[in-house]
Length: 41
Image (cartoon, rainbow, N blue to C red):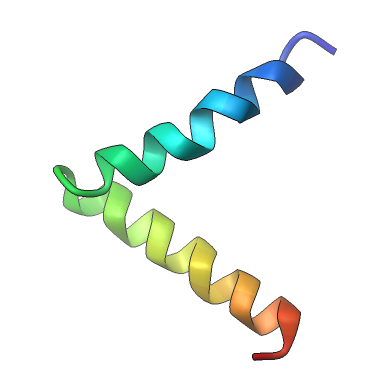
């Protein structure tokens, strides 16, 4: 699948961009909260 290797760069890129763009920060915060709920923490 050609899109799968892109995830390796997309996720860290979003984390870096979250420092500069509030909409991206909201997306990263939402994803972190979702992971915490999935883990049960």
